[in-house]
Length: 267
Image (cartoon, rainbow, N blue to C red):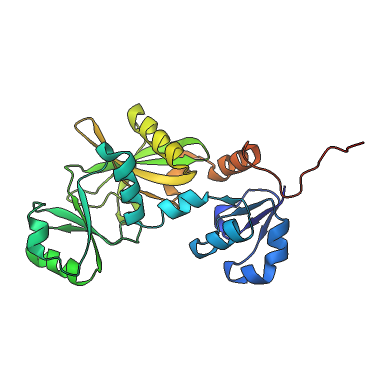
């Protein structure tokens, strides 16, 4: 099988891979047509590759579309798994006042920028002044109840199953559970219910590469978000070879048809 990657760092260790820079896609169309699988294109490429060139990509196009920003992720979860989503409102800043938000939420509350990762763009809002600053800086307002947690679960789903899960624990007095923000790891006592929930969500939505953030509050599970291009540091600490699971999945996917299949001879 022939693979083309647009992100060499996420495909290290996968055999038969050719790297093409995303910006050279149009110059390399013939090579792309000959490939069996295209790995980790950038978001702006996926429609052209899938709908235009009819190519198989990894992650799946549904993974890209639903994980593109927090709005897309939250809306689909509110439709399909509403009991597992924290109370959230998404609205335009135009015509919305701080009082409108205060009618539905108590302080402290969580406000997020719709496109960010690694804890960036996630704010703990404790008063109206902070809320107004957030509203002034964002056209789309993403407001969420604050859950009483000091940790969350990162559950990594690759292919068709969970390959790794661990707790991310905020530093003392901290708000963010992200490793990039100083959180620590704990690999013990992972609730099976969280694994089952993530597998159910991912399979239902045809997601095949994502890091899900799951909160546990009094035995109830909440999906905070999922990231398509999740960090691998926790997986490295556990010795989990992500590229191995990717390769096994894309070479054994029963729905995959090679670009140039060998057909039986007809006499």
